[in-house]
Length: 198
Image 1 (cartoon, rainbow, N blue to C red):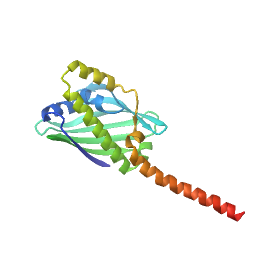
Image 2 (cartoon, rainbow, N blue to C red):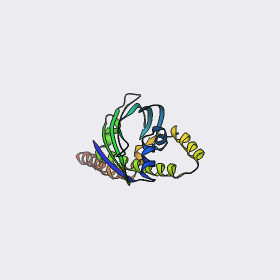
Image 3 (cartoon, rainbow, N blue to C red):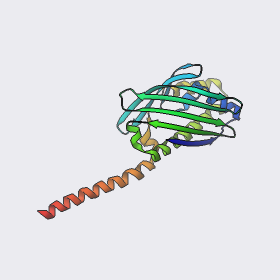
């Protein structure tokens, strides 16, 4: 599944570029994410995900396989799996920084989150990119290094998992309500038919 997103660079391109290739700087802006280690171009971490009443904990690792400082373009490969065996996720993310940040993601997921479908996953990922961009802007826009460090510390270990249903909001209702209405119609039809047969 390929997804494309973009957002306006919230600071000079070089500053945004330096932030995006530093996992320790961007991790606090990734909803539900916890960075556990960094070793050169590789890193590991976990992501907490809530899907309705179900909570998933993905653990995995990532690596920058390409970094081009001239073009300000990088390719990142990451993969992880749910600790309870409820699914896996892998992605190849390519981003380039200029007046805007262009992101292309080749995503593969299995298990419960995959049941959301391509359309809904695209909508949810778009909202997450918007949240990330807002957080990045506030981080880069702060002139107080101690304040930024404190914000990063608080967000590197999130208290709450990322809630996919809550993040999707109205789009989920648009999909769920027609299905619920159809199910209700079938149930009513069956009940009325049985009453008539009596």
